Image (cartoon, rainbow, N blue to C red; front, side):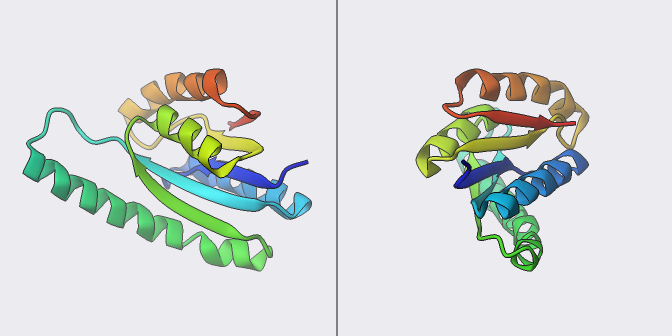
Length: 138
């Protein structure tokens, strides 16, 4: 039923819960788990500043995604990770399409106050535009 499960991951407690649920589903179905972190750059920013901010964000997310690999290995789940830049909902939907995901798992809230306010609309957008089922973890 599920061959590829995509999890939106930003290091928050909610994304940790989403990862745990996605990992459990992937383990039960023998699916590949894809953990995607999306960085939304600040607006407006000068081009030089933006490049440095994006590089720092990618490094940060690659580091936190790297910590997930031993957990997946312990459960005998193949884990792929990626860091994308852009609007979180749009990038999650595009990643699901690109990877032919059978399920998207995401947390209900993000890390900051602003992300908590926005993630309601992010999860709503992902639910609306995803080509596959979406599980929002509370």
